[in-house]
Length: 137
Image (cartoon, rainbow, N blue to C red; front, side):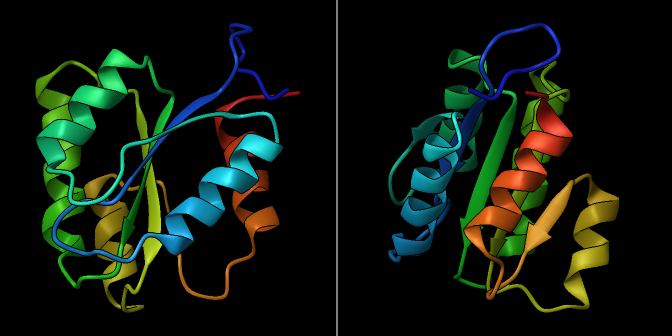
């Protein structure tokens, strides 16, 4: 089981913000993380940034993984990061993936997004990054 330096299991909220209704990728990533020993909370479709941040805080999450295919990634990632800061939860790591143009990735990283996975990223690449960057075995 993957754990944090403090010894508790890694907890990741996987979320689909906005109006995007395609969640197969998010579910595949959630399953891969679970299979790797991460506790995963999947929030379901059509979540607002406020709902996602509330879930992350309530679940004592180490990270939030956002799946965005709608083209609203700049707005949605920014709002989640702002809300985490407002709630004194800026220590919760934000990462994500989806249909995100390459030129937007450095802007998202400057905004505070730790990692963006684009189409073609493997589930093992994602789970390895989560384990390497959020905890240890």
